[in-house]
Structure formats: C-alpha cells, structure tokens
Length: 283
Length: 283
Figure 1 (cartoon, rainbow over the protein chains, first blue to last red):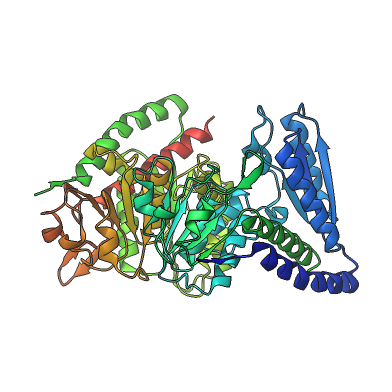
Figure 2: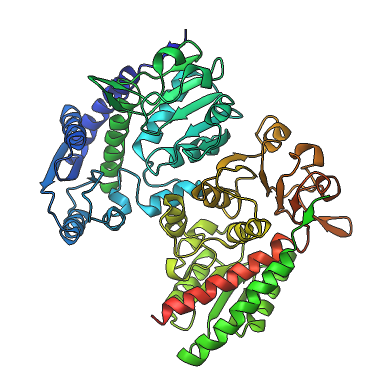
C-alpha cells in the first residue's frame, strides 16, 4: 500500500514557518500584509472557500477583507472595484473568487487586476511569464502547492514521465508548465483523449484535475506512481477526489487523499503569495 | 513512402490570397501595412532572415524598415527605440530579431513592445492569453504555420496523440498549447527525456524543434504519422532538419522537407500578423 501524502501536515508546517516571518516583517515595517477578496453571488462552495481564506489570514496575523456583492452586480461595478483596490496601497493581494455569475465576463474582470497584486497568478501577464519560464510575479496557488507535495515524496521530477489529466487555466496547464520547467516529460490529456487509461498508465507522476468523481481507478495507474488528486467532489454525504482512492492506494507509491491533500496547500500558497506581495510593496 | 508537405506551395497560396486583400485595404483606407524590424549585430543567420522578411513585405505591397544597429548597442538604446516605434502610428508591427548580443537582456527588450504591435506574439501578455486560450492579439508565427501545414494533410488533430520535441518559447511550448486547444493529447519532451524514441513512437503527429541535425530517425516514428520538422541546421554544405528525412519519409504518412517546409510558413504568418495589426489600427 502506498504512502499517504498528508497535505494538511505539509501546509501546517509552511504556515508555521511563515507565521514567524510575518511577525518579524510587521515589527520591522509596521505594515500588515492584506488580502482583499471579491465574492459575487451565493455559490455555496465559494462561500466556504472564502471563509477558509479569511480564517487562514487571521491565523497568520494577516488582514483580509471580503467584498460580498449581490448576484446582480454589473461587470462595470466589479471593474471599478478592482481598479480602486489596485490603487489602494494598503491592499497587497486581490483575489476575485471564481466562478462569477453568468453575464459577467470573468476574463475582463481578471485582466483588470494589477499583475503586482495578482496573488492568484491568473493575470495574462503572469501566465505569460510562466509560459516563457521568466519568473512570473505570482504562480497560481494550486500548481505551486502540487509541486511542494511532490517534493515531499523525494521522487525526482527531472526526467520523470508526468501525466496531467485536465487542462484548466488554474491547475492543468500551469502545473504542466512548472513540471516541464523542472525537466519532466509532460503529457496533458483531457475529455477528448481516446484511451485515458493507456496514457495515465505511462505516468511516474500522475496529476488528476478534472472534477469527475473517482474516474481514475487503480488499474489506470502504473505500479509505484506518485498520484496527486486535485478533485473535490461531493458524493452523497462525503467528499471524494477524481481518483478512486481505495483502488489507487494499492498501486501508488505515494498518493494524496481528499480531503486533507491538495486543498490545504492551495490556501498556504495564497498566503505565501500575499506575504510576498506585501514584502515587495515595502521595497 | 509518405507525402511531402510542400510548405513553399502552401505559403505561396496564402500570400497570393493576402495580396489581393492588402491591395483592397490600401485603396480603401490609404494606409500601407508597415513592419519595422530591429536587428542588432552581425549574426549571419539573422541577416538572412531579416532580408527575407523585407523582400516578402515588398512583394505583398507592404512597407518594411530594418533598424540595423551595431553589436555594441546598449539595452537602454534598444528600449528607447522600441518605445518610439510603439508611439509611431505609421508602424503596425514591431519585430526584434533574436538572438540579441550577449549583455542585452532580451526579455527586458521584448517586454517593451506594445502587445498591439507584437507581431511575433512573444510578449508575455500575448503568451498569457495563448496559455489561457483567450484569443491572444497575435500568435507566434512558426506555431501558427505548423497548424496550417497539419490542416493541409486532412489528418484530424482532435483526439490525436501529438508529441512535441523541444520546449522553446517560440515553437515548442506555443505549438503544444495550440494543439491542446484543438483537443489533441499532447506530450512535450526534450533533452532530459529518458527514452526519446519510446515517446516519439507514440505520436500520430510529431513535431520536432530542437536544433540538432537529424536526431529523429525513421525508427523513432510510428507508421503513418504526420511529421513536422522545424529544424534548420547546416551540415557541411547543405541544410538539414532535426529529422532524418530519408529514413523518416519511409514511415511517415506526411512529412515536411527542409528547406521548403515550415520556414516559408513562418514568414507568411508574420505577414498575416502585420496585416492584421494594420487592419486593427484603422478601426
């Protein structure tokens, strides 16, 4: 049976070491790192995510504020708010919680966030720098968290065959680029891939992020692979990943559970990005 | 034996159809599409490329100007020149010929080009839009040309296994993203890939862009694959690609030769991007 990667534990360690650094930073500069979140509408999952972001900031002595706006908010209002936050020197990080209600062009809103405050790493400038391998100001949080988790296994990324299932802007594509930069051979597959199992079975490191409950079974995994499950799906009364944990853990050498796998890392990286923005702000 | 993809012929057809459109555009608007190229130093290959760009513009009735600067040019001078060209309304496209001499930070110079005039598609904003699948203002020329060549074969991209050998910013990574967007399953490999042949043999469509003469031999290619060879290497007195054409053409269903394969398409796409910039400029 494979080792379970405890994302909660890894994330706690990162937060702990950051906590002391933030304390020192505040004492030295008088500046409190500050994240402002824009939340539009009543999406229940988004409500939960935003609350955990608020709590996580508070726990580390960082400030956060959530702008809770009604479903009926107009795109222009959002753009105006983002522009105001861009100008506000007390605000170091801006995060627009996705998804936005229908009728709002998310791209137009995200493009307005100043790349210097884009702690989610989704601005085209930062994505472009990532693609070019030219040190983006911020790398999106989940991909960064995944890299940290892989590192804890000691399995080398360089030269590894990596398969990424899913090609989203927030996980699949950026994590593929980060791993490519670290010299992995990287394959990206998705819903149109003809024989998914044939591709996933090649992977020394397998990353699954498609949002379909348990579609990757143990028999689609190479013996000894590292398996990173990014999915969070509600199945009757419990949360499950995109990987069928029970059958997968028999084959994998290392595997992330859901919950307490990738999820806590995403928030830790968001805190890290916000602190980074604050540090740059005082320079 | 496989069919040879005649890039010269495809490119000629594209230029021909553009020629009439440009004539019409000029008559209607009084505006002449204009490309300005910045060439620093004496690199012989760059000299050749720039001359062919100039000739190609002239042939289509487009204006071009090359700023030929000495090897000793300072980074700040280049940045100033780019900023001047950004402001000049008569200039629609700006291209800084790479490589730049040592001591000049190419990134800093390229980042200065206005995304609206970035006909090479290498500005982080345009690269970021490409990564996000959000219609960049310009897509870099060689990747665009490769897609056009694949289309001429009639071999479907959707669902195909594509292998890209090489991970450069101007070819490997952007072409991988374009093919991913068209629903291919895409693998990127490179010098650190452990068993290159094992990976390339999976490809229904194989794109090679590494700059190593003839490293991909026929026995590394799946029977019936489409092979796109982006390499241009001088071997004794002739030009050869990254693919060993003689052995590869026996296995491939379609294959690009070197020269007269991908090369002419790159210039055609540059002309297309410049014309596009001019069209946007009059709107």
